[in-house]
Image (cartoon, rainbow, N blue to C red; front, side, top):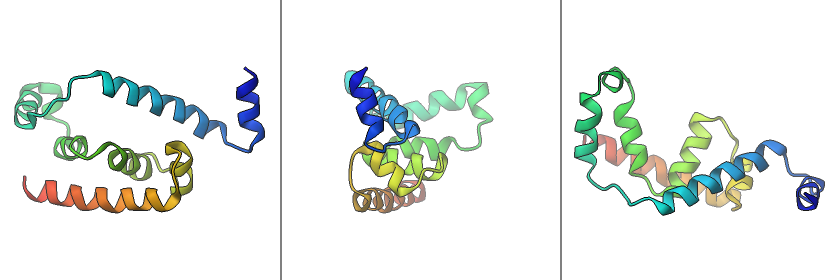
Length: 117
């Protein structure tokens, strides 16, 4: 408990701190899973599910899942969750320039993936 109070004394925000816990948990869970590489099979499974077949952004989410981890996380936090580059840098424990690079590369990768579909 003492380490938590020290963390807040350094001026970090609670929202970034709690999100970092979730992010770390997510990464640990992803590392323990066997990677799924057959995206065509996943897309056919998703298209047969009546609930998912009405979902408007399936292709985008499938493309996001193909991005490398840091790019995907930066893109999701910035565009879907509305975090600033500074906040994302705190969450990912990296520099703001690195986050900007992840966002740029993520956009380029998404553009390439979606144009091939």
